Image (cartoon, rainbow, N blue to C red):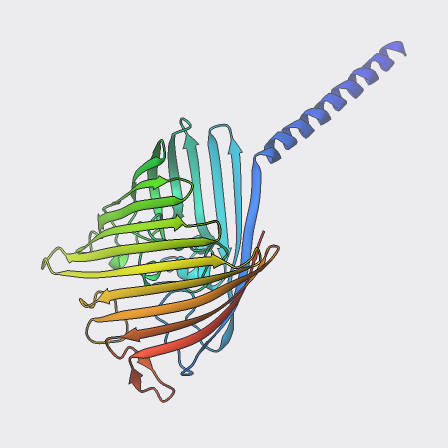
Length: 357
C-alpha cells in the first residue's frame, strides 16, 4: 500500500512537471510570434464612364471592389526569423500575375538568418526593394498606384544578403527572373528560365532623411530579353507633420538577337501633410516617359503621361478612409470618352476603406 502511494506521488509529480514543461514550451514559442494584417475595399468612378486606368490594382470602373485581405505571421527564434505573408483578393492576384496555383496566395515567404547584428541573410520570396510605394494599401499614403510601381518589379524569389555600416546599408542577391516564385517550366512552351537576376541596393537613413539606390539586372533566357533597371527613392521629413518623397526609375529592355533597346522611365514626387493626428493630405505628381513604346498603353506609338493625384487619409484607430482624385494627360490618345472616342486625358474619383491590425 505504501509502495502504491509512492508510485501515485511520483506519477503526480511527473505529470505536473510535464504539464509545466509543455506550458513553458508553448509560452516560449508564442513569445516569438507576431501576427498582423490588413483589409481594404474601394469604389472607383471614371468621369467619362469608361475604364481609363493603366496602373495596377484599381482598374475596375463604377464598381465596389475587394482589394485584399492580408495576414502576416513572423516568428523569431534566436538568430532565425520566419515570415509568412498571405494575401487574398484582386490586389493579391494581380501581384502574383505569373502564378495560377496555390502560390497565388503567397505574397511573401522567407527566412532571415541574422549572422550578426549587422549582417543578415534572407532566403525565399519577398516584396521588391525597388520603388517608393508598397503592395499593401495600409502602408501607402495614396490608395491608387503610380506608373513607376505598376510596371516595376513586384517581388523577388531567391537569396540575398544585407550588411549595415553605421547609417548605411548594402544589399546584394540573386533571384529568379522578376515576379516569378518559380522559374521551372514558366518560359514559353513549358521551358525553364535558365538565368538568374542580380538585385542590389545601397541605402542611407537617419532621423529625417532616407535614400536608396536600387537595381536589378538579368536575362530571360531562353527568351532573348535582357532587363536593366536603376531606381532611386528618397524621403525627407521637414517637420513631424510635413514629408517629401521622390522616386526616379529607368528600365531598359534589350533584345539579344537584334540588339534593339527600348527604355521607359518615370519620375514621381510625393507630399504629405498631417493636419491633425487623424487627418492627412497627400499629393502625388508623376511623369512617365514611354516614347520608345516599351509599355503597351493603348497607343500604336510611344507616349508620355503626366498624372496628378490629390488624396486625404482620415484615421480612426485602425481604420482609414482614403478619398482621392486623379487626373492624367497623355501625348497620345490612350483614353476613351463615353462614346468610345479616343482622347488624351482622363479623370476619376476613388474612395477606399482600409483596416490595419
